Image (cartoon, rainbow, N blue to C red; front, top):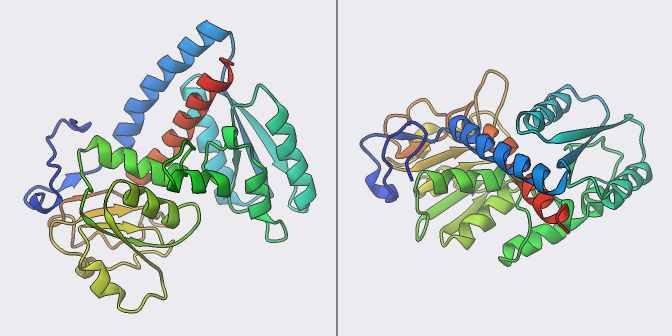
Length: 298
């Protein structure tokens, strides 16, 4: 497939050593939004109903407020509606579970997003798992994760699923490749590892306590930075020709991987910003539209 910048990609990771490919998530997300506009319009014409994404924000964390606003703006761009549920910092687990239950029962809601993280006194896992599987468009439930691992129908976690879409779009075949995922969170590190495994990569999962991490990373054809620590993964750990996926974003516009020093010698890389971030949002919206196409047509 031809990437947004019109260049031609090579599916052989080892061969991509002369001209590094910028995996432009921002451009791809823009193209996907145009397609989503058409799908929303078609759904409205057929059913008279507009897809609705419900966003739940507990407390007033500034970063979370920004992320929710970005997702609501994306809904607006493609013609969807969004419903904002704001709960106070002191809301209890029970109150949040009740709110999710009401959204599960609301036939107009096609997707539910519980913004992570919630305040520490709330049982986040119980609340994630209260979301109806059919409306789990952010891929956060244990049931959805298990079904994804077993290659059964389920919405994938938005960031990992967006990464897979980006790799597919640029024709990067991971079959037989050695992938090292640095990070083990339930909504990023673990699911991207399983998605890559399902696409026939050989996957190693590492974390901040992994012994010999630089040596392990140096063996990888594909490196995924999903640790949440600024530039924790150093450029000199990464072999020439590797595909570098940086899923982190920190103050100053840097990610989990030290990109200086590898941009000119890797096979392909995601810029920060403009790589993985836009794919996370468009994947959430895409999965909500797909959910709507099923739920509103029943």
